[in-house]
Image (cartoon, rainbow, N blue to C red; front, side, top):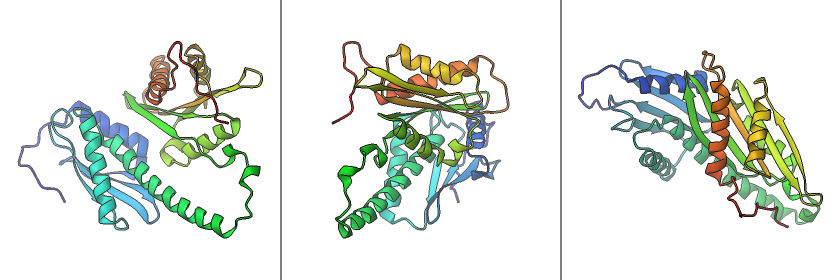
Amino acid sequence: MFVDDGRANGARSLIQVDEIEALSSIYEKEWKTEDEANRSYSIKVGEGEQYVILYTKLPEDYPSQSPPVFQLSAPSLSNQRKMHINAALQAVYLDNIGECVIFQWIEKIRELLQEQLFAKDQVEENEEVVEDLSVKLDSVSVDTYELPEIIHGEIITDRRSVFQGHVARVFSTRQVKQVLDKLYEEKTIEKATHNIYAYRILKENTKSFIHDSEDDGETQAGARVMHLLEILNVQNVLVVVTRWYGGTHLGPDRFRHINNSARQVLDKAGFIPVPGQQQIKKKK
């Protein structure tokens, strides 16, 4: 399946070991070892007919000098779609040279597959609307069908535990539920050890806040994330931190990682207000 580059097999770097252990913790049975000696692995991304199998082989000098060698198997996708995914993975590597990229590759493939399915659903939905012009869209609240964009943060790994933040702009508790439901559709997130979240929504008419948080079994973690939103003066935002437990207790370090994951994804999304800059308000 892979072309051997002729280099002698050396001891696996600790970085590679940590990355593979993290991927095994996140994806469980979906992550498969093809050949342990040659550092070859695979994972199936997607369901039904729309899926991609990503095969990877780790060179000895990955990630410091070389990218993983990879192949894609996607029988239901056109050559154009495969080329698009291939180019996207190469772009991810070029943006993260010297860093572990397999997790980002997997999630990029998942993102591209979901975009394709969404586009297909939109076409079908538009056809239905054309057939039934009696639908009264003005009687439906926007947030009953408009899913906010979800932005995913970088992963933090410590002693096999993995942390990742997710964030979305929300203006109602209904949108909070929409975002959470969408996240939980992803099996790896739904099966995570903890999904900690907090949201803070400004009510324009009263200038007061609707807010809540969830520990999901990690005592006081939700309150800590809420406190972060408050001290950063973040509003109209839902932030979720997913943790996959790696088998080793982290003690207080886990709260530092939760906080850093939340702050990192808020910063990535541009949701941390700059002094003197007005917060984004809901469009009329």
